[in-house]
Image (cartoon, rainbow, N blue to C red):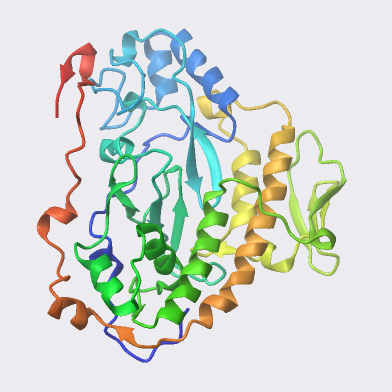
Length: 388
């Protein structure tokens, strides 16, 4: 993290005031690494009747087959109680289910204990969700993740960049952008402020700001690189030709073990082999968990027989191999940025005291709450419409 000499850096919670608690699905089966399994699980649930359907659903105090809830904002899932539900599976959507692990989710409010509708209302192509990880993540160089997908990660809070759809009303302390523009001699865009935050936030979730325009530009360039890699938007990242990971021996249909040979820089997936895999990609951890191991375990760990989670592909899909190669590349490239983050020296620091004296902090109470974004009716329980 940046080498700093002052202890009055503002809190991330003050710079991005609106935050939302993590989604709480309550059951694992509505999420999967492939959409086909989700549709098969939905069909299996609806084919079951009585106690069998209830057992497959895995009821909790928050959700049972008799729960009455409205649609998720922007989704077309049914609103009748699941005890008598019928029809096709709502089209699965891409989500960030674990650090750097994009999976699929059935977007149905009846399946999620705490769906956080306020996040669904602002989720679009412009949005960036910043997610706090649990504790320090040395390989990441920051305690934050950023994603364009709706995050399901726990336990950290979620801070959307925008309070309204369409990239409207940045979730930044009112007056912060104007204050920085005055200090820096330039007007930073909301994405630039977020890029700086991603490049500099410390494990204690303080954000050292600067009034040095040259340092700011360096940090923003670095943060945009981090943001591009994490969001996986546009052109896929690539390592230089000699360092790109390739499948050297085909992966088996049903792999069970994952092993890394550091001397040969080879990832063994049973008898399958992928190389070169840089050590920094294998060692990459978030909150003390090795990302590659967690990603693999999610796709191979045995599920309890007879549960919906046990409905999964019969063999390893080719798409997972492509995703694994991309994940290795992304982790290696992110790890390479950490030394640059550590080189961001504090110059002309902007302190929390400076922001308080300028009236930027503390942020007003309204900025901690979601914006009222509804301009249409959302379908409530049992098909009744309600304007919230």
